[in-house]
Image (cartoon, rainbow, N blue to C red):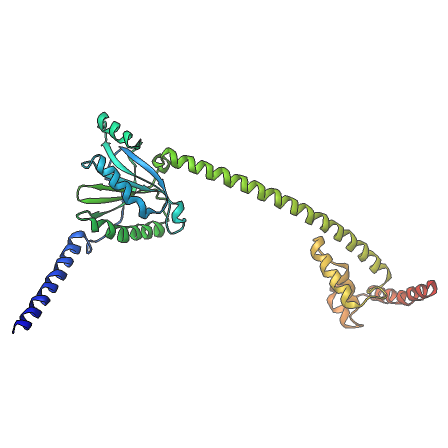
Length: 323
Protein backbone atom coordinates (compact mmCIF):
# COMPACT_ATOMS: atom_id res chain seq x y z
CA UNK A 1 0.00 0.00 0.00
CA UNK A 2 2.80 2.36 0.87
CA UNK A 3 4.49 1.72 -2.49
CA UNK A 4 1.38 2.74 -4.42
CA UNK A 5 1.11 5.84 -2.26
CA UNK A 6 4.69 6.86 -3.07
CA UNK A 7 4.13 6.26 -6.76
CA UNK A 8 0.95 8.36 -6.66
CA UNK A 9 2.73 11.22 -4.89
CA UNK A 10 5.58 11.10 -7.40
CA UNK A 11 3.18 11.24 -10.36
CA UNK A 12 1.30 14.13 -8.74
CA UNK A 13 4.51 16.06 -8.22
CA UNK A 14 5.55 15.51 -11.82
CA UNK A 15 2.17 16.72 -13.06
CA UNK A 16 2.33 19.79 -10.80
CA UNK A 17 5.85 20.53 -12.05
CA UNK A 18 4.76 20.28 -15.68
CA UNK A 19 1.77 22.51 -15.01
CA UNK A 20 4.02 25.05 -13.29
CA UNK A 21 6.42 25.10 -16.22
CA UNK A 22 3.53 25.43 -18.65
CA UNK A 23 2.05 28.29 -16.64
CA UNK A 24 5.44 30.00 -16.50
CA UNK A 25 5.83 29.70 -20.29
CA UNK A 26 2.32 31.10 -20.85
CA UNK A 27 3.04 33.99 -18.48
CA UNK A 28 6.29 34.66 -20.34
CA UNK A 29 4.38 35.06 -23.60
CA UNK A 30 4.79 31.77 -25.44
CA UNK A 31 1.28 32.08 -26.88
CA UNK A 32 1.33 35.84 -27.35
CA UNK A 33 0.45 36.97 -30.86
CA UNK A 34 3.17 38.85 -32.74
CA UNK A 35 1.69 41.76 -34.70
CA UNK A 36 4.02 43.71 -36.99
CA UNK A 37 2.90 47.10 -38.27
CA UNK A 38 4.22 50.31 -39.78
CA UNK A 39 3.39 53.73 -38.37
CA UNK A 40 4.38 56.28 -35.78
CA UNK A 41 7.04 55.27 -33.24
CA UNK A 42 6.12 54.50 -29.62
CA UNK A 43 8.91 56.77 -28.33
CA UNK A 44 10.30 60.23 -29.03
CA UNK A 45 13.86 61.46 -29.13
CA UNK A 46 16.04 59.84 -26.48
CA UNK A 47 19.45 60.25 -24.87
CA UNK A 48 21.27 56.99 -24.24
CA UNK A 49 24.38 55.77 -22.46
CA UNK A 50 25.85 52.92 -24.44
CA UNK A 51 28.76 50.61 -25.10
CA UNK A 52 29.58 49.60 -28.68
CA UNK A 53 30.60 46.02 -29.42
CA UNK A 54 31.66 43.88 -32.40
CA UNK A 55 30.95 40.18 -32.10
CA UNK A 56 28.14 37.62 -31.76
CA UNK A 57 24.82 39.02 -30.61
CA UNK A 58 24.63 36.23 -28.06
CA UNK A 59 27.32 37.99 -26.02
CA UNK A 60 25.19 41.10 -25.44
CA UNK A 61 23.82 39.79 -22.13
CA UNK A 62 26.99 40.91 -20.35
CA UNK A 63 26.46 44.50 -21.48
CA UNK A 64 22.80 44.43 -20.42
CA UNK A 65 23.87 43.29 -16.96
CA UNK A 66 26.53 46.00 -16.81
CA UNK A 67 24.21 48.83 -17.80
CA UNK A 68 21.45 47.67 -15.45
CA UNK A 69 23.89 47.44 -12.55
CA UNK A 70 24.80 51.13 -12.99
CA UNK A 71 21.16 52.28 -12.81
CA UNK A 72 18.55 49.49 -12.49
CA UNK A 73 15.51 51.79 -12.83
CA UNK A 74 16.34 53.02 -16.33
CA UNK A 75 14.96 51.42 -19.48
CA UNK A 76 17.40 49.30 -21.45
CA UNK A 77 18.08 49.64 -25.16
CA UNK A 78 19.96 47.64 -27.80
CA UNK A 79 20.65 48.56 -31.43
CA UNK A 80 21.69 45.84 -33.89
CA UNK A 81 23.28 47.05 -37.12
CA UNK A 82 23.93 43.78 -38.99
CA UNK A 83 21.83 40.83 -40.08
CA UNK A 84 23.30 37.77 -38.31
CA UNK A 85 22.00 35.51 -41.10
CA UNK A 86 24.16 37.22 -43.75
CA UNK A 87 27.07 38.63 -41.72
CA UNK A 88 29.70 36.60 -39.91
CA UNK A 89 28.73 36.56 -36.20
CA UNK A 90 32.23 37.71 -35.28
CA UNK A 91 31.72 40.83 -37.43
CA UNK A 92 28.24 41.80 -36.22
CA UNK A 93 28.06 45.30 -34.75
CA UNK A 94 25.71 46.43 -31.99
CA UNK A 95 25.35 48.61 -28.92
CA UNK A 96 23.71 48.08 -25.56
CA UNK A 97 22.90 50.67 -22.93
CA UNK A 98 20.28 52.57 -20.97
CA UNK A 99 17.89 55.39 -21.85
CA UNK A 100 18.83 58.43 -19.75
CA UNK A 101 15.99 60.70 -20.87
CA UNK A 102 13.15 60.96 -23.38
CA UNK A 103 11.59 63.94 -25.14
CA UNK A 104 12.41 67.39 -23.82
CA UNK A 105 13.59 66.03 -20.48
CA UNK A 106 17.31 66.44 -19.84
CA UNK A 107 19.34 63.58 -18.36
CA UNK A 108 20.60 63.85 -14.80
CA UNK A 109 24.19 65.06 -14.72
CA UNK A 110 24.92 62.74 -11.82
CA UNK A 111 23.67 59.72 -13.79
CA UNK A 112 25.67 60.83 -16.84
CA UNK A 113 28.85 61.05 -14.76
CA UNK A 114 28.17 57.65 -13.28
CA UNK A 115 27.81 55.98 -16.69
CA UNK A 116 30.88 57.74 -18.05
CA UNK A 117 32.83 56.53 -15.04
CA UNK A 118 32.14 52.94 -16.11
CA UNK A 119 33.14 53.50 -19.72
CA UNK A 120 29.77 54.29 -21.28
CA UNK A 121 29.36 56.95 -23.96
CA UNK A 122 26.47 59.37 -24.40
CA UNK A 123 24.53 59.75 -27.65
CA UNK A 124 21.26 61.34 -28.76
CA UNK A 125 18.76 59.50 -30.98
CA UNK A 126 16.12 61.66 -32.72
CA UNK A 127 12.47 60.65 -32.86
CA UNK A 128 11.94 58.59 -36.04
CA UNK A 129 9.08 59.77 -38.22
CA UNK A 130 7.86 56.33 -39.33
CA UNK A 131 8.92 52.87 -38.23
CA UNK A 132 8.21 49.18 -38.58
CA UNK A 133 7.50 47.90 -35.10
CA UNK A 134 6.24 45.05 -32.96
CA UNK A 135 5.81 44.42 -29.23
CA UNK A 136 6.19 41.41 -26.98
CA UNK A 137 5.43 40.88 -23.27
CA UNK A 138 8.39 41.34 -20.96
CA UNK A 139 7.43 39.54 -17.77
CA UNK A 140 10.27 37.08 -17.16
CA UNK A 141 13.80 36.45 -18.45
CA UNK A 142 12.30 33.72 -20.64
CA UNK A 143 10.35 36.47 -22.45
CA UNK A 144 13.59 37.73 -23.99
CA UNK A 145 14.41 34.36 -25.56
CA UNK A 146 10.84 33.90 -26.79
CA UNK A 147 10.83 37.40 -28.28
CA UNK A 148 14.13 36.91 -30.12
CA UNK A 149 12.94 33.64 -31.69
CA UNK A 150 9.46 34.88 -32.62
CA UNK A 151 9.53 38.62 -33.30
CA UNK A 152 12.66 38.93 -35.43
CA UNK A 153 11.53 36.35 -38.04
CA UNK A 154 8.17 38.15 -38.25
CA UNK A 155 9.93 41.47 -38.81
CA UNK A 156 12.13 39.93 -41.50
CA UNK A 157 9.09 38.57 -43.33
CA UNK A 158 7.14 41.84 -43.09
CA UNK A 159 10.03 43.95 -44.37
CA UNK A 160 10.94 41.53 -47.18
CA UNK A 161 7.38 41.13 -48.47
CA UNK A 162 6.88 44.90 -48.68
CA UNK A 163 10.43 45.59 -49.91
CA UNK A 164 11.04 48.19 -47.21
CA UNK A 165 14.31 49.81 -46.21
CA UNK A 166 14.07 49.49 -42.43
CA UNK A 167 17.23 49.51 -40.30
CA UNK A 168 18.90 49.36 -37.85
CA UNK A 169 16.92 47.11 -35.51
CA UNK A 170 16.27 48.51 -32.06
CA UNK A 171 15.04 46.80 -28.90
CA UNK A 172 13.68 48.91 -26.04
CA UNK A 173 12.80 47.27 -22.72
CA UNK A 174 10.21 49.53 -21.15
CA UNK A 175 7.93 48.42 -18.35
CA UNK A 176 6.35 45.06 -19.15
CA UNK A 177 6.86 45.38 -22.91
CA UNK A 178 9.73 44.90 -25.35
CA UNK A 179 9.48 47.30 -28.29
CA UNK A 180 11.07 46.23 -31.56
CA UNK A 181 11.61 49.27 -33.80
CA UNK A 182 13.08 49.61 -37.31
CA UNK A 183 13.28 53.22 -38.60
CA UNK A 184 12.04 53.79 -42.14
CA UNK A 185 13.77 57.17 -42.55
CA UNK A 186 16.88 59.01 -41.34
CA UNK A 187 18.57 55.73 -40.52
CA UNK A 188 21.96 57.43 -40.44
CA UNK A 189 20.89 59.37 -37.34
CA UNK A 190 20.88 56.09 -35.40
CA UNK A 191 24.50 55.28 -36.24
CA UNK A 192 26.79 56.06 -33.34
CA UNK A 193 30.29 57.51 -34.05
CA UNK A 194 32.00 54.11 -33.74
CA UNK A 195 29.64 52.64 -36.33
CA UNK A 196 30.13 55.56 -38.70
CA UNK A 197 33.91 55.16 -38.44
CA UNK A 198 33.70 51.47 -39.28
CA UNK A 199 31.42 52.24 -42.23
CA UNK A 200 33.87 54.85 -43.51
CA UNK A 201 36.78 52.40 -43.33
CA UNK A 202 34.70 49.73 -45.04
CA UNK A 203 33.80 52.07 -47.91
CA UNK A 204 37.42 53.17 -48.30
CA UNK A 205 38.58 49.55 -48.51
CA UNK A 206 35.86 48.78 -51.06
CA UNK A 207 36.87 51.76 -53.21
CA UNK A 208 40.52 50.66 -53.19
CA UNK A 209 39.50 47.13 -54.18
CA UNK A 210 37.29 48.47 -56.99
CA UNK A 211 40.12 50.68 -58.26
CA UNK A 212 42.51 47.72 -58.36
CA UNK A 213 39.89 45.66 -60.17
CA UNK A 214 39.38 48.44 -62.74
CA UNK A 215 43.13 48.71 -63.37
CA UNK A 216 43.47 44.94 -63.78
CA UNK A 217 40.45 44.87 -66.09
CA UNK A 218 41.83 47.74 -68.19
CA UNK A 219 45.18 45.97 -68.61
CA UNK A 220 43.45 42.74 -69.59
CA UNK A 221 41.23 44.60 -72.04
CA UNK A 222 44.25 46.35 -73.56
CA UNK A 223 46.08 43.05 -74.07
CA UNK A 224 42.99 41.45 -75.56
CA UNK A 225 42.44 44.40 -77.89
CA UNK A 226 46.02 44.25 -79.23
CA UNK A 227 45.70 40.52 -79.88
CA UNK A 228 42.35 41.12 -81.58
CA UNK A 229 43.88 43.77 -83.86
CA UNK A 230 46.70 41.41 -84.89
CA UNK A 231 44.29 38.58 -85.60
CA UNK A 232 41.99 40.90 -87.54
CA UNK A 233 44.85 42.18 -89.70
CA UNK A 234 46.07 38.68 -90.47
CA UNK A 235 42.58 37.47 -91.24
CA UNK A 236 41.91 40.34 -93.65
CA UNK A 237 45.15 39.70 -95.53
CA UNK A 238 44.34 36.00 -95.74
CA UNK A 239 40.82 36.78 -96.93
CA UNK A 240 42.08 39.01 -99.77
CA UNK A 241 44.69 36.49 -100.91
CA UNK A 242 42.20 33.66 -100.90
CA UNK A 243 39.63 35.64 -102.88
CA UNK A 244 42.17 36.35 -105.64
CA UNK A 245 43.44 32.79 -105.95
CA UNK A 246 40.57 30.44 -105.25
CA UNK A 247 37.90 29.49 -102.71
CA UNK A 248 40.44 27.20 -100.98
CA UNK A 249 44.13 27.96 -100.76
CA UNK A 250 46.36 25.29 -102.40
CA UNK A 251 47.94 22.95 -99.92
CA UNK A 252 45.22 23.55 -97.22
CA UNK A 253 42.16 21.51 -96.46
CA UNK A 254 38.64 22.89 -96.68
CA UNK A 255 37.89 22.36 -92.99
CA UNK A 256 40.93 24.39 -91.93
CA UNK A 257 39.87 27.34 -94.06
CA UNK A 258 36.32 27.17 -92.70
CA UNK A 259 37.63 27.24 -89.10
CA UNK A 260 39.79 30.26 -89.79
CA UNK A 261 36.89 32.07 -91.40
CA UNK A 262 34.70 31.57 -88.32
CA UNK A 263 37.47 32.83 -86.03
CA UNK A 264 38.08 35.87 -88.21
CA UNK A 265 34.37 36.63 -88.39
CA UNK A 266 33.93 36.66 -84.59
CA UNK A 267 37.13 38.51 -83.75
CA UNK A 268 36.91 41.24 -86.35
CA UNK A 269 33.24 41.95 -85.77
CA UNK A 270 32.62 42.40 -89.51
CA UNK A 271 29.09 42.23 -90.85
CA UNK A 272 29.95 39.50 -93.37
CA UNK A 273 32.65 37.01 -94.30
CA UNK A 274 34.27 36.55 -97.70
CA UNK A 275 34.89 32.90 -96.78
CA UNK A 276 31.18 32.38 -96.30
CA UNK A 277 30.41 33.79 -99.73
CA UNK A 278 33.10 31.69 -101.37
CA UNK A 279 31.80 28.58 -99.63
CA UNK A 280 28.36 29.21 -101.07
CA UNK A 281 29.88 29.56 -104.53
CA UNK A 282 31.94 26.37 -104.25
CA UNK A 283 29.30 23.93 -103.00
CA UNK A 284 28.46 22.59 -106.49
CA UNK A 285 27.09 23.57 -109.82
CA UNK A 286 23.45 23.92 -108.84
CA UNK A 287 23.23 23.91 -105.05
CA UNK A 288 25.85 26.54 -104.49
CA UNK A 289 23.73 29.22 -106.16
CA UNK A 290 20.77 28.62 -103.86
CA UNK A 291 22.30 30.83 -101.21
CA UNK A 292 22.42 33.88 -103.46
CA UNK A 293 19.62 36.33 -103.89
CA UNK A 294 17.37 36.43 -106.97
CA UNK A 295 19.13 39.37 -108.62
CA UNK A 296 22.31 37.26 -108.98
CA UNK A 297 20.62 34.76 -111.31
CA UNK A 298 21.51 36.45 -114.61
CA UNK A 299 23.69 34.73 -117.19
CA UNK A 300 26.37 37.34 -116.76
CA UNK A 301 26.69 36.65 -113.03
CA UNK A 302 26.62 32.90 -113.51
CA UNK A 303 29.81 33.07 -115.58
CA UNK A 304 31.75 34.62 -112.68
CA UNK A 305 32.16 31.41 -110.65
CA UNK A 306 33.44 29.57 -113.67
CA UNK A 307 36.05 32.25 -114.25
CA UNK A 308 37.27 31.87 -110.70
CA UNK A 309 37.43 28.11 -110.93
CA UNK A 310 39.51 28.26 -114.13
CA UNK A 311 42.13 30.33 -112.36
CA UNK A 312 42.92 27.62 -109.85
CA UNK A 313 44.74 25.16 -112.21
CA UNK A 314 46.81 28.03 -113.59
CA UNK A 315 47.87 29.01 -110.12
CA UNK A 316 48.78 25.42 -109.34
CA UNK A 317 50.88 25.08 -112.48
CA UNK A 318 52.77 28.28 -111.63
CA UNK A 319 53.55 27.02 -108.13
CA UNK A 320 54.78 23.68 -109.52
CA UNK A 321 57.00 25.52 -111.98
CA UNK A 322 58.49 27.59 -109.17
CA UNK A 323 59.22 24.48 -107.14
